[in-house]
Image (cartoon, rainbow, N blue to C red; front, side):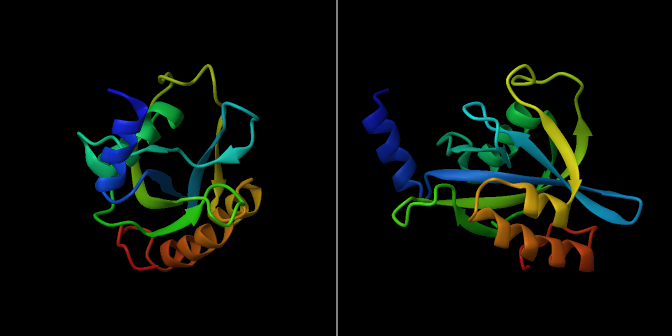
Length: 154
């Protein structure tokens, strides 16, 4: 399929890119999984273009698996959105919470990316995507109030 046709299909689906915010509860605190980008090694959350055959939620889950080697329960609706690039006309990325149940020792992109679990508020400061920081701070406040949920209201 041509990239133009594929892009048109993603746009018709309503969103071009989605991200997963993989999290777990450890010792009474909430941690989020960050991965490095393949191009410049900056810290990000798993994200990618929407796969039409699995939709936005399925794509978020797939990206978490491919980029970070984790799987779990994806929230039914996005927790928020952010711009991946600092350009004002950059498209928004919809982000889904993913409560991690499984972490693999090997995964599809483990030779291309590093991964690191960090407390949510530390992760918010560590990410190298400016637009993602305020979203992670809102997620931190939401999950610290009710860490056992994948609710969609921050």
